[in-house]
Length: 130
Image (tube, rainbow, N blue to C red; front, side, top):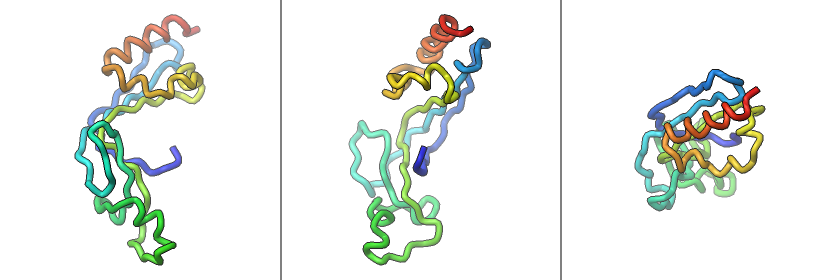
């Protein structure tokens, strides 16, 4: 993804329609967690940007991002992270029709329940699978 992402996993599901495996996917649901307060968030936010100084020890993202400007010495292993507060994620093969369609990058799976998304994908898999 190009960045470190942390979340509290609640459920991981593998979905296969028994057709072309290009339609198979993983769905990861994040357990809702409270924001740390180190970065401004709204109730509708799904994530927060942070500096992780040690595992589980967070600070404002500027602490890590501007460490060289301020000549700060941070603990070894410090890093900038994105911490997901809630949400679900779907993972498809890079060659899947779903992944090849840029319109699907709108997180439409978030607007559907797990079963609604499975039904939606199942309809497409049956219609377009070879």
